[in-house]
Length: 249
Ligand code: 13P
Image 1 (tube, protein in one colour):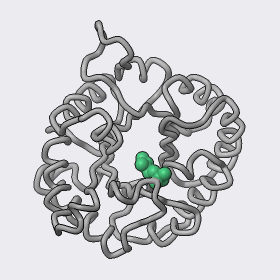
Image 2 (image 1 turned 120 degrees about the vertical axis):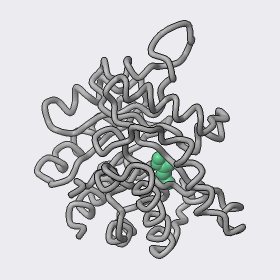
Image 3 (image 1 turned 30 degrees about the horizontal axis):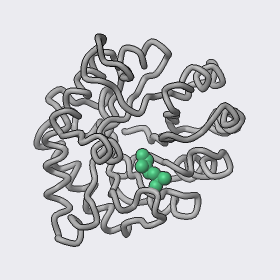
Image 4 (image 1 turned 135 degrees about the vertical axis):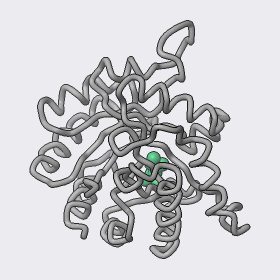
């Protein structure tokens, strides 16, 4: 059985004041039968880790460099993330693919670096609105998974997040049938490429997950949790999402 996972991606948001939100999220998450992951800006990882203390909530970075160390001013390696207690790293987010021109090959190299540092990679894929309207969604996602998920993917080192670009930060979401179609295709592709591990790799949905739509999204087959942006910054929004995931079938 795949354990459900709720991941919060703060993106370039949050501040020291957000640590009080972390306290409330931790208090609510303890005792739930799900995994919870918080991915604040790298500058705040240590503080968030300290606030979580010994509780079983995980922390993650939002990107890493494909190399472990060296002359790469401004970059952060997977080893640095691991050094401050992170266990996960989000890779290939559409904002990085768009803002920084990240290709599938670069994302795959970052995933291998994450694995080498014993981090679990949360690999993001998703179509643009133009690609969906053109009927290319499944083809685009299959190509991204093929290129971004390297050989060696397994339940313990890989999570895949389906994040339609047009649903991120817009309040729009695909229909439950559309999410189900993509997640079924992802699972089938994992079975073809990684037959022994396919059932263990968790598939998250991301894009405008809110307290009001979480339960419906979590009821979709093959949705093992969510990658939450805006609604992960405030306990008032994130805690009900955690509760919905805990209650999901
Ligand atoms: P929102 O939840 O703000 O739409 O962001 C989703 C996302 O990109 C998470 O990685």
